[in-house]
Image (cartoon, rainbow, N blue to C red; front, side, top):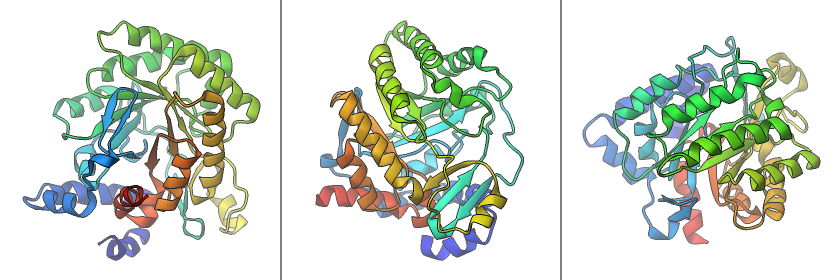
Length: 343
């Protein structure tokens, strides 16, 4: 089906196509009988795929990365596409429009995307209202949290606290996003002192709960070895549950897309196939230095089952996809799970 739809979607702007695809999915899965048909096409139900990670039971290790469903509007429909877990967000305390359009661009020659969305979302309370309406069975839901653009970094902890407290009853795990390149100065929060302060504060709040929830940190692929060593030390010091490696890159090296076209697109985070090797190298480095006990979710450049297996062999515990869905369609999730079973 996606082979038929893809040329039509690629004739539209990337952001329009994204919104239309999700609206069509919502519509289709609301039709009696279609939901079960989608599950038959895309879901692989096999106990060998189950993973127990940071105390949660994942039906399979393939998840949807944050950014695909920023506001938690579509996760019920997306749950019919075979994901073991779905991460919604990034959400901020107050709704914000994000950066001016156009802000999402395809690079077909590279099977890549550049985005500078800028945490566009309706705000955490709107997300909570949607989550209160109920969740699909059998899918883990993660909440990816960030700060508002207008919030200065020295007050950022408060933004993360607000999102954490509001979402706590409704999601299974949290992801602290300090690595998006599209919010000014956000990546400065990856520095050792502010990041330690932020994660320690969230852990204090977390451990005040009757049943604390896993908190993960999503990191940039653009960190150098010294910075990665700081991340390793912070993860160990704060006792957070795990790491997501990686977010998008600001790098543009080695692209097949003409340089002039890339320059005209302008700034933003690059995702997709060009990120594959860098993300895998970060995963391998983290696994070596964190040891075997800290879960790592591998994301970045997974456009085939082979790419997913490579992430797992490098040390990832689970994987997430996003840009690969744009180029390969939802069947990618099933293919990865089938490849895992074949292995």
